[in-house]
Amino acid sequence: MTPIYLDYAATTPVAPEVAEAMAQCLTLDGNFANPASRSHRYGWQAEEAVETARGQIAELIGADAREIVWTSGATESNNLALKGVFESAGKDVGHLAVSAIEHKSVLDPAQWLAEQGHELSLIAPDSSGRITAQAVASVLRSNTRLVSVMLVNNELGTINPIAEIAQLCREHGCLLHVDAAQALGKMPVNVTELGADLLSLSAHKFYGPKGVGALYVRRSPALKLAAQIHGGGHERGMRSGTLATHQCVGFGVAADLARAELERGSEQKNSPEQVAQLRDRLWAGIAGLPGVRVNGHPSARACGHLSVTFGELDGELLLLSLRELALSTGSACTSASMAPSYVLKAIGLSDAEALATLRISLGRYTTEHEVERTIAHINTVVGKLTAKVS
Ligand SMILES: *Cc1c(COP(=O)(O)O)cnc(C)c1O
Figure 1 (cartoon, rainbow, N blue to C red):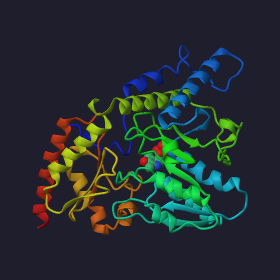
Figure 2 (cartoon, rainbow, N blue to C red):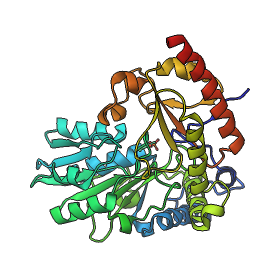
Figure 3 (cartoon, rainbow, N blue to C red):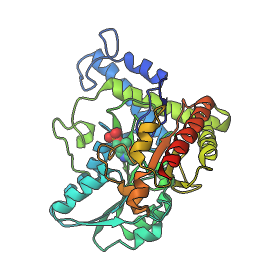
């Protein structure tokens, strides 16, 4: 039997509407040209498609289209945000504060900046994985230049109080970067309400294609970023390279679908509310197993996420035994190694507990039937493994 896909937090399938729009931007009879070609209508048409898509993304997050910079994904957006802010200030040493449970694509550039001589603080989460404004306040210094806190944590689904953190950053006179890769399509994301100066987006976490993302860069007051990729000065000098029309268009259609879904609300089939209901049904169906518990915030949690610790069972063995399910131990980015997840350890789990944790993530195409099958399968497998241990 094909396994049930429950790894939507790692990536999502491309929506059929998105795939169709992308396919029209590839071949000779389609919108294939270089959007930077100024001397013919093929180029103008490609440029128009890219600018329409830019507008669709801006609309989803309440931004101006001129505030959207295309990138290859949230990894590049995060690199551009962190290194771009620090390098634009020349050689002056500055202080950077990032949450300890950021994605590696924030933590690694932060570490790189520290190696270049900048000061770095890691902000500790509470036991639900929340970064509180107080925790941010406790690390701010007179030379703090940038704070980076994610909107939704990729392993736990916990939602951070970004508006409060933004208020604090404003009062302190430093910038706020928000990695919103896990939030798009799951909840409203509005840059003005959040108060973010920089916001990273990725298409493939919300039914768009892999390999394209964007960085929101606030315009008023204007914010200076040093380019990380040089070569022709595209994207207002912030990011060079020929734009991939099909990728941008796919991202734009994904943004439109997400916006329509959020606007139509909870009656919509597999709206974020309904995904949350399926997630809660799944949890209710396995919560009675001995020693299981859910990680993350009980209410401030994105719709599809369910991080579950199964007593002290061996996570790898558990994953191997759950043959009918496709899901992750810890985060996808650390699952190549057997090191316990740094996110789970930061919220207080022991190594053994972290290794006995699975991330189950549901999405737009998850069905009730799949949830019922998942519940039955987990109960059977965990029952057998527990009987062996005791
Ligand atoms: C997936 C993810 C990224 C990386 O995005 P890519 O587009 O795959 O580079 C960054 N941050 C978070 C929180 C993510 O979930």
